[in-house]
Image 1: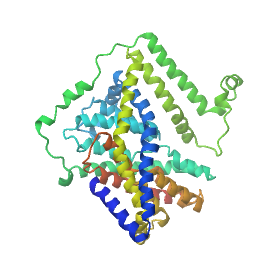
Image 2: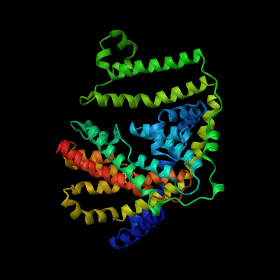
Image 3: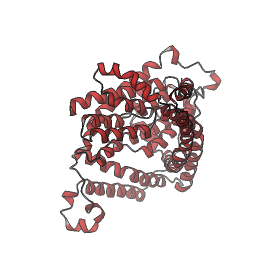
Image 4: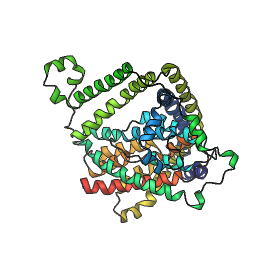
Length: 452
């Protein structure tokens, strides 16, 4: 399907550009997108991926990934029945989902690419997406979102009275979208058009052997001193978390104010934050530094050579970033050409009458269409809508909810499948688009009920 979509975007861009007199913009957009794919996405991703893939290697060598997969086995085995319960892919997928839920996109992408590499090792038909890959991609494109940071920021910088109001609406919309996406991907995988071809027996190694290869060797127990250090870090982090979460309460103690001025002398937020949102913001603030500290400490306690293993894992970040460049260039160029040729506007004009019949705000249609294609394009549309209608209007709040409850599906498909050289995506795109569409309509109805 991806072949036909890519070809259609390219050909339609040329035809529409010729008829509309925008061929210059189409040409310029193609080269701009190619440059952005390499210089603004792939290369900056190298450093981020090196950090997280290095940390993932430490977690694997220390046995943390397998332990995490074991804890969440009941849920994960139902979502991914083709993946062995103790396989490292399970733990990597859990970490990716957790990062997505908390809005930690810098951590989510490298963790997701690591999960895809594990899933590819279990894939009996290289080059063709497995059922587990399609399910994982669908969950990624419709991930439950606790804190839509970017959308909140757009409302806040435009002086919205309550920019955090979309936290609850985005959470509800993503819950609906994720549920529908999971149902869709499970139903689509059973259709004849998307059914996996039968692989020759020689190409399908037993899952048990693969799992044994991925499992770490027997690790030494953590002695008392190392445990004291781990618990000490947990204790200090918990205390500092509480100080940051409740500065009004702990700030009454002069000793703490003098000892920790960085926490208690921060400027107050522009608007009063609900406790739940303040908790999520504080959790997001501490999540990444805590993981970067606790993973090497625990690995060292397990006698893992932390620096050497981190460097080995970080090397994968460079190679993975190079591998996805052609896929990024191809997809982003096609999308940019189609957009600059006026394709999105053409679809918007065609769908307006039908959507008007179900009371769908026509102002939101360009954002809904662009969201699956381009993150920067949809962000620009969101910003324009907020400025035009005001940050506290129903249109702006709904647009922010749509942005926070959906994903750039084609970018995710290109990056994740490109990292493991999967060309036949099967039902991943239809399932992802179904989840995106559900998130858009759920956002409209939920915001109308909450803010209308």
